[in-house]
Image 1 (cartoon, rainbow, N blue to C red):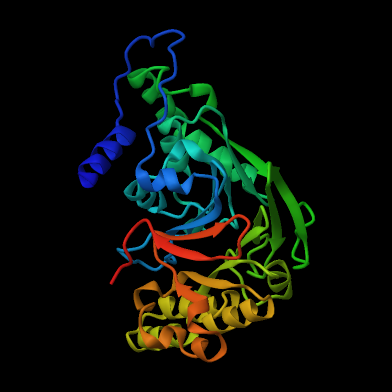
Image 2: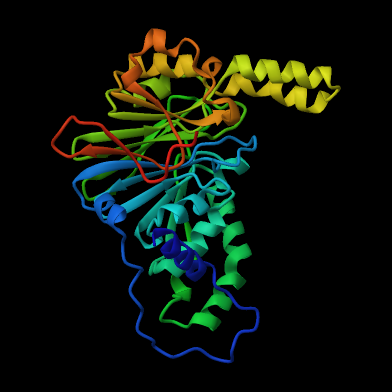
Length: 360
């Protein structure tokens, strides 16, 4: 029955037309958003700060994982950090309520972090969003938002023509850019509170993804609980400082030993272009061991690895070689699409669960 419900929900969100009728019903009363299922009713019960992984892969292909995406739920609102390709598809599998998404935060402008932004615009609109969707990001986010708005403008008009004003609020359909960090120019020590929403405070901080500038991470603080999302970064003191005493640190990781092996294989096969790319990427990503050292120095309760490079080998022992020697095994977890973490208010508990099953 759950699978059937997911099929119908996905079909409803994907409905479209190519020949719009002449007019829509004037002043139609908005239909309510789709009801929450049991799991999502709990996710939005307001009792905990929650983290949901919706994309744990890197640009390298992985059929079981979407590209970069993490969700933080505070109260009755969800906030999305990065919208990598296939991430909306994973949220549909969870039956995640798009109408509850109150904002999107972009860490930087690599394609594997922004590719599904248009889908988030369209799908949240169809799901019942009745206000423009804020997209927070550093310098450059205005161009990003303008481009996706232009690309999806006609899509929204066609859906309005088909479904009418009871379903589509055309005035609310666009994304709206919320740019911050004009001083984030590569000093690697900048931070800025960019959102206060009730009990929630969101801080952006600069990370070292050089030569990609600006590049930022985010810290979410809510009712005494905290989550830090690294974005893409090498080891840096500003990253460690902003992760201080966090309940959960969600960090990317790259296994240098495995990437080095891939580089050798590509050179041996005569693929100099791919070998050059493999040689370039380790210096602007953090290794699993360095991420563990950061978590230890920052006194983080739970370290969550995501954005695995290469994700196809993430479950092999060499990927996390050395981590268990410096950090207890119950204080770190290999993230997957659908991992859920609850941080109950008024407690120090860190609870793990799942909204999609862990891949083999």
